[in-house]
Length: 443
Image: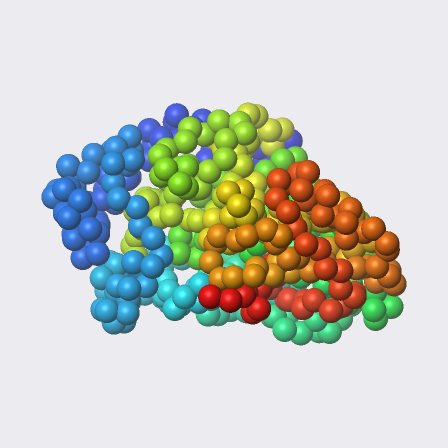
């Protein structure tokens, strides 16, 4: 691959040591900005014993600073309307105020200046270009323009110069018409929605392989990097799947996966510094091939509501080493979220890992699952109940549930109780799939 096939060759091929040298003065300037403009961080750092920007130090001293978590940002916004003490720019300088979905609590509002939005778009362009989207492509988008940060994908696509066919969410019929009529080359979306699109197309007599898609850009939830899920989507559409990953509070599409399909490269360089920590001990973990941990993000140039050591709650595997595209630095695959994780008699269980094991039983299963904990909270007693949907036209084969239970016990080291349910009985989504359902759980 030649450098002209990279969106931002100088940044994307920069060696990590050079990147750190470039980021050091920018980070120190951001810390000065926090002390001057952010009541939230001036108070937080002062309480932690850091009374001046100079006392905070540089990137090597980050490990000594306190983390930031979403709940304290929510609490600040609730107590100090409209946007909390973390607001570091005048209201009149804000060009967007996005919000999180609020599925794990009250929505968190994310104020963005024109400069912030420009940096988000530039980062996202690097990631979507890595994933194979080019300016001459026709692209269907299913993200609405608001209220969530994913709506900025529209602006990113416009900046990239694509021929966009915006459909929005909640109208699969309109989406299928657009795919069939306009022969678009690319579509961003969630892995679960891609599978649903293929299912819905077949139900209407449309072969998903005939609509001309070349690139499906998977984000919003784990799954696009799971070998079985990826193979299922690629087979359905005869197209490549590339993952992207962002975090609404930090930036859209910070990571993008290149043509090697060997993990998502960190492409928010220049704008965001990333650490890796052990989510339990909270100690730093070096970026080495095969390392696992939780990414922690620090803004380097943010104006609206900069974040310092923000805990992502994602659980990732790291890949290092050169790739043919020339991109350098860490690549990741997201295994799941630590706040979705269950502990079954001492064993950490990620719902996406359960799905990956169950997907090995295709074509007998559809790939949809629903984990049904018996009680609320992280700690669960075995067996963990899991509803598994059988494939279309398949009956519950004798021994299938027992075979899945054995595979889970062997690979994930916990005891499950598999309940096979009929095809189309578990809910579909045009955004993120809900893998854990506490509706029947007791307190």
